[in-house]
Image (cartoon, rainbow, N blue to C red; front, side):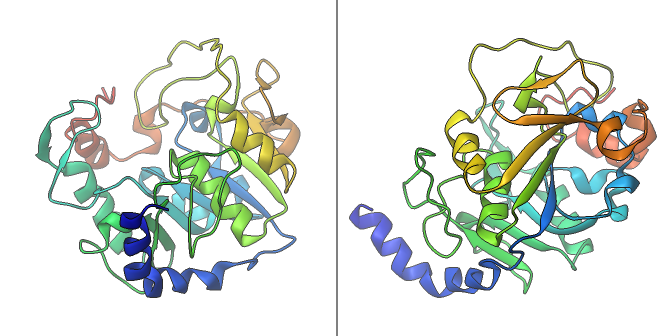
Length: 273
C-alpha cells in the first residue's frame, strides 16, 4: 500500500474488523451466486432454495427473489449511495436514481447482510451493512481476498461475490445468471426486454480469478441448455441440475410494472420496453 492507502486502512480498521465474523463461516458448504444475466429469464428461482445464495445488482426486483435462501448481497460500486454521482455510462454527474432505488430495497430487506464499498460509509449505515475496499490492489493475479483487509476482487460484481464465497469458506459454488462465464456469451439483464444476440468473445472473462478459485473450491457455471459451454469453468445445464426444463419469461412477467418504470428512469441505458 502507498501512504494514502495505509492511512485509509488504519482509519477504517475498526470498521473492517467486523468482517472477520464471516471468515470461514460456511466452511464445507455449497452456495449459489446470482448475477443479473438474461439467462435468469429461463429459470424458476423457487428451485434454488436448497442452498445459501449470494446476490447482487437489481436481483431484489425479481418477483421470486424471496423464494431464495439469500443471505448475502453485494452492491460495491464506489459512491453508489451518494445523492449525485458520475453516471458510468453517460460519464456525467447527475442525480443518482439507481442508488436511491437500491437503497430503498436494502432498507426493505433488512435480514440480508450487505457488502458495500467503503466509499459509501458516510451514506449508508446499519447493523447489516458491511464495508469492503481494495486499498489500491485491484489485481486478481493473485487476488487478495480478505474482507477485513485488502479485498482486491472489486472490479465487478461477479468477481466480488466469488471473493465473498471463498472468504466465507464455501467449497462448492454454482454461478447462476453469470452469463459472461460461458460461450457463446449471452447479453443483457433479466430485467431488460427481449432477447439479445449471443456473442463470441476472444477475451476470456475473469480468467485469472476464476482459475485461482478453481484451486480453492469446486466452482461451475449454470447454462440455459447444452448449446452453451463454460469457458474456464465446468458447466451444467439448468435441466441437468434441477430436473426441470427452462421456460422463458419476459421481463414484465418477473419484474413489477412499477419497478420496470423505475429502472427505465435510472439513465443506465437499460432496454426496459
